Length: 227
Ligand SMILES: Nc1nc2c(ncn2[C@@H]2O[C@H](COP(=O)(O)OP(=O)(O)OP(=O)(O)O)[C@@H](O)[C@H]2O)c(=O)[nH]1
Ligand SMILES: [Mg+2]
Image (cartoon, rainbow, N blue to C red; front, top):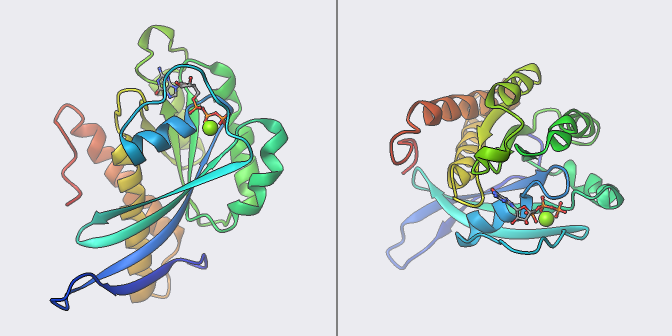
């Protein structure tokens, strides 16, 4: 992978035990109001920003470090503004992104219809092996829902990207989303160091498998893939 992914061995305590740390850049994309900032705040602080909607201006970013399979993963998460007038600001960040979380709001057919435009933009500005996950957010709004799971899955299949349903309000699948993407990226790094043929497909396949496993186990309390 040719993005600036850093993997270093860091020493955490005086016992001398080392834990490997990887750094990945993740970008949140999608129309204004689909819930990008709320998804990030839910993941970072486990709270929900309800009440008046404050649109993101330009671009914002937060760091969060998680542990996946005994490895430290530092996520640099870029929260972009969905409003048209800020689009060009985000373009320069696409190239460095390891993963893109593309959101739409299941209660907004317009935001769903714009997914194709976002995917064209991704093709133009991002690296070809970037991991993309299509996120159907606000699934807690069951009564107002106009975009069905079938519609979302069909579009994801057409573009060969993973599909997941989330709610920043209830927290459904939010942590899973970031952890699955991180695990996929870690496996991509591992594959790159052990073979010369590894590419973005390694990570996309891992992500797809994790998402499918999560769908099958969604009636249980949590997915069993992460430690
Ligand atoms: N019911 C429900 N409301 C949500 C959810 N996620 C976000 N919202 C609401 O949707 C509105 C917009 O959320 P934001 O996260 O600010 O949207 P955004 O995508 O960051 O918008 P921009 O910054 O303009 O691009 C807010 O009023 C949130 O409270 C969700 O999962 N369920
Ligand atoms: Mg925002």
